[in-house]
Image 1: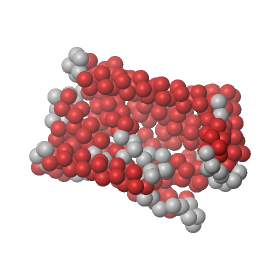
Image 2: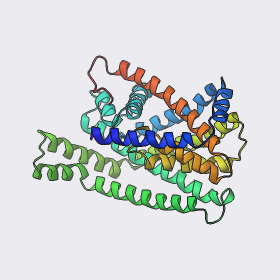
Image 3: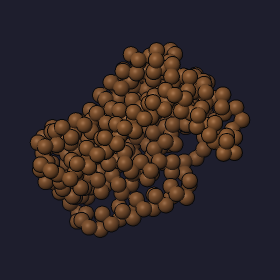
Length: 322
């Protein structure tokens, strides 16, 4: 799998190189440099989104609600690991489970991560639908972009529905039994998988108010992303309407999700943003400037997350990203 991830990363870098070769980079550098201390302003919506998403995760536990002082650094550490490793966007999830122990059992920690991922994806689909609803106000009728996003929304909704159904019917236990039949055996794994299935099924049955709260906080976190888009473009000198910001955030997040197999969605995110901006009558360079600013913000989150990882692990070894 490591070779595949490296190949995908290489393809992403090649795509990024092709995109950079096709546009004049001077205006991009000028726009990004003009932000100066304005970059600090962008840390506020980013921080608020992180806190809201962490609260969403907090409500994904069956037992006592863990304090944010525990969950926030663990979430940041997992996010940093996701960004810097060659494990798509899933490598940080085992890290979070590991760092939560011994506050919670492996089964409880894993169940919370699965449920949190589910409600977060559902919130993203809802924001995508919001972008589709508002898109006729800023995009031409019959725009292929809108048709593509409608297709993504349908596929995403079906995938989430199937994922939830599988969770409720013993996804992990059944999967491990299949692997056992194929000769892949993990000592004690079946008991752990069955405990995970039980924790998830119990949560969906008994803790529906917490499930709703988890989704609600993730949705609020996603909506804050719209504010971030508006602020970035305002600082870059692109005055846009709130409707345009909604469409950019919704479609940009969807395209980035499609590129989840490529580490950091490198190339995919930049190309997608450039295409979105051109479809909206803006410039490809503006889309690249927007992408660069978000990458800078992402780098800040990675630094904070890796610092949190070093503090939280308390000397326990964690696999090096890569």
